[in-house]
Amino acid sequence: MPCSGSQGRLVAYLLGQKVRYVAFSYASQAGYPAEIFESHTDPRLFARTIVLATRYAIEFNKLLEGLRQSHASVYDDGRLATINLVQTVQP
Image 1 (cartoon, rainbow, N blue to C red):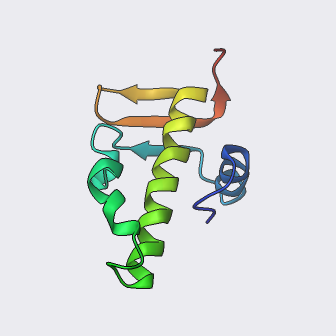
Image 2 (tube, rainbow, N blue to C red):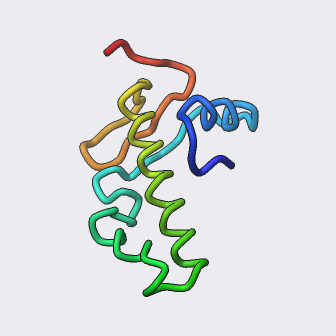
């Protein structure tokens, strides 16, 4: 699954896997808030696998946040959203 790149690439992949909806805990950035974990991207302090996993998680959260802004949500309680990957919204 694409963890970085464009939203279109992620949507195409997920729809190709027959995934139409994505749940995203955006209030907590899926439990991986960038402002807390940004320091884990320093290769002088952390092992390469931790650095890469952290970068992918932060980038993936950005992609999901972009999808939340560009696609309709079938549910959104201010913390958690279920995003409809088929229905985009007008800005």
